[in-house]
Amino acid sequence: MPQIKQRGGAHMDNARPMRWFGVSTIPWVAVVILGVVGCASSSPPETPSAPPPQTTSTVAAPSTTTSSESLAFARYYSAVEARLVGEGLLRTDGGRRDAPFGAATLAANFERIALFNEHTLTGGRFVAQQSPSRLRRWETPVRVQAHFGASVDATQRAADRAILNTYVTRLARLTGHPISVVNTGGNFHVLYLNRDEQVAAGALVRQILPRVNDATVRAVETMSRSIFCSVYAFSESGARPVYVAAMAIIRHEHPDLIRRSCVHEEIAQGLGLPNDSPAARPSIFNDDDEFALLTPHDEFLLRMLYDARLQIGMTPDTARPTVRRIAAEYLGGGSS
Image 1 (cartoon, one colour):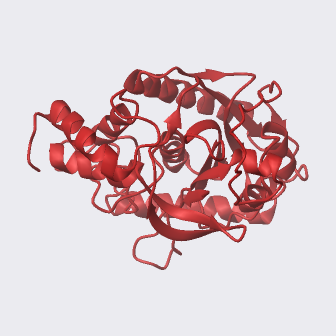
Image 2 (image 1 turned 90 degrees about the vertical axis):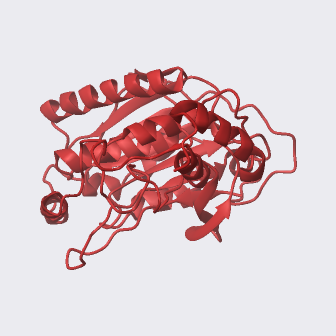
């Protein structure tokens, strides 16, 4: 069953506006073979065909002038960032000074974040529905490729590429899995788009993901202002839940800290951490927006996710004893 994880947003007049993030597992073969969204194929799983080579691309903007809506989005997100930082949120210190955690907490947080879904695809739309899931991650090398809208100038592209390169190198080190940034032939696509480009992104999405379903295209093109960024990770229908492709959407209107925060969370979630937990601290996998960037706690989650002792397809019940042993090994068996 396909799933999506999203993180909630609120208007500026609320006490604590929050970002939205999404992860989905789309029945990749079902879309191609059955032509129906949300149906699992009863046929034997097929090996996905390699996508056509892609170069670092520029999306044609709908017009040469940025729309008033895009400019309004930029003002809104700047105000949100200023407000969150003013409230002591979007921290970048990692929580070492005031957010200790032990092995039991780490294991519980991993189970909730890696082995549960927050949203599911029902009737062609993504709806909130917590449910147990199975452990999902990549087996093939992850090739992260950036795509920039025409609204993103050369200076900003260089800054985005530098952040992406540094972060991807860190993720490869943490997971022990081959993850790299490429200029062509990517399977994890990161799209930097402004509002004008986002609402017309269907052609690009179908170009880089030829087997994408209509629900995903519609979700991208209709992202509301409350959705700050999103990521979609795709696996084969009926097979072990192995990711074969992913796509993240990063809004160009974001100021620097939210922009970087989106990159950190979306790519990490697209590696196999699809859910949030209100108990996770210090963590970016929490709807409270306390932390902007990947924390030491989150580094442990990624190490656990790609630990060979955990097998793709494990349920919460089957994974729990191993998760607890690994957490105790990392943190010395603390009880909290």
